[in-house]
Image 1 (tube, rainbow, N blue to C red):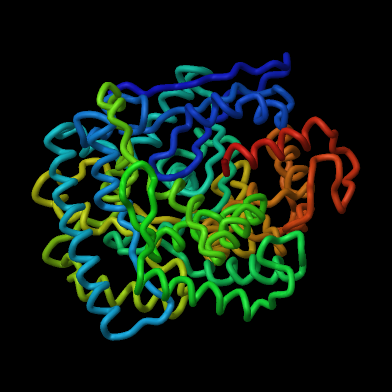
Image 2: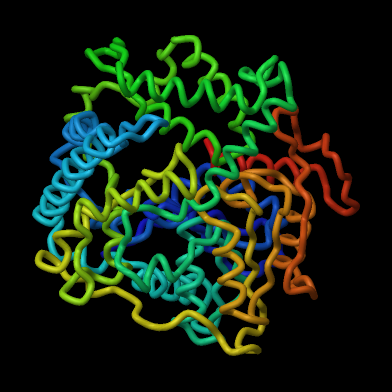
Length: 504
């Protein structure tokens, strides 16, 4: 295997080593993050680190990558047919809707299972070595290669990247570990200790949507669906739109005959709430949809396959599924594959408990169905999660929003509790979005700089940092509600630019 690496050298004579980045996913490209944002990371870290982005095994430019199609055009055609495995669900759930949902889940599960076998036919046994455990060993190897055999690992991971960080502190000896930041924490119990479930942790998605709606109403005309509408009005309009598009999909022309049903509306809600910076754009798209204009929505989620892409290799679109299946407890006699009905029941439960708009976010169960028979994983960490107090010389820094749609605050608290005084938890208590980078806080920036540049960390096990970026209010790096002494404008601008790169 070969790991593709992008490295931006330190610009400061006082070099502190390398810092490895992972943007999340799984399946996100660290090299792409480095190409786009290494200079901003370097500015935040005062040029004292080599910024290293790499593509984990199976991802993008690493070899072999998870290739499931002959070319990019074939991948695009499959995605068009499967509609990204988005569920078409109304807001009002009836017995007929449940029957239809059962059909949709059965179709998706069957297609994903066939796709899994197709990926194996193209890539082979290498798929068995593409779990997070191997990624940790790769980072360990690269640190020694770049900085010397005794150099400590410095790491900064977002979303799924927090899984890498949590594995790292368990798998490697404390002497190997330097300064580690994880932001937008994924719960290791859900990720590694149990079989893969149909859904990701969307427990707080409803609260984030509520924050979006309430902020929109407070913003008035600054929000495209604000104006004279109340929160109740917005929810009623959204529900009516979902019900209408489910019952009567609307034909659109996006280079081929297509129809808009409730699925793309759910998809735009899902993607749009990840960052406060994107809330105005989400509101604008919803305003168009409410007015019966579906062009923006269709152009985003119903793009036509490009015949010119037959000359391009497929993308590693399903690398995340491979990594997820490798990490999860495998299905078997003691952990049977969930039935279609159990998957449906899980989605209905999430619709009721989490959010009526995001329950279907990210189900890959069908992809893992072929795992035990085709390629049992050989790269799965099977240990515990938790460290005795005093294990780490420098505590790991855990960052979290109070309201994160897919990486809940509770997951960050659970990680901090498992690690004890080997960690410090920083919460943005008024923050909405996925990771703290989704809503700017100069307080958080200050803590990160003190930690990475000087090894200093908060005395308290739980620090609160208020956000400076207000929803639907024009914002830039020099205009902040709280002017924190000691933070230069250059660092602030770089911090803000990282937000734009992580949430394009």
